[in-house]
Length: 232
Image (cartoon, rainbow, N blue to C red; front, side, top):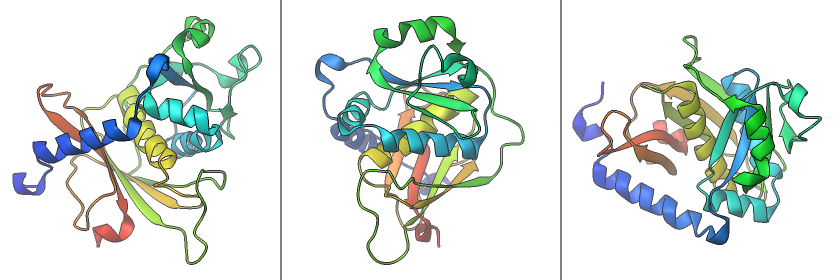
């Protein structure tokens, strides 16, 4: 257990939230646009890889629209193999467990949303401590010309989260970090699951902040992305 001095302060969380708002920019007339993910089953490594692949293949304008809408994503329960014929997705995971639909104003996906129900459920009790994923070569931004790709650690605080909430925080962190160029092609990410989140000793590159589910008047850090060497 971390002491209070080792935790993120409310001022630090507020600053991180303000920075996120500045990065997002303005959605203009296309507010309330969202991406969609349809899940047949959940595997943390496979899902994280599919989220990265989806963000990597989006055209620049669509990536910008998603970012301006705070990478909002609707998670639906369904079999991608069954819905893909009628509603062709943007990307589908190699194992067919999840497919993604590019960001668009919500009425665009009315038929799909009427066909499927919102995803519900708890996180699996056997959620692994860590999984590793690699940023696709198609990601925006040039890969390093010299030396090895960057090594990152993404720590997600899973305390009190159901499956949909976990997916929201993971997707937002990976999507925004990739769209803004923080994550680059071939970078490796160790996704770590924890029940407490504190600042890495060497600092962090991105912090996912939202309202605390236990105390709505306060902010909470749900995910922290940092270079692996920041953890000593």
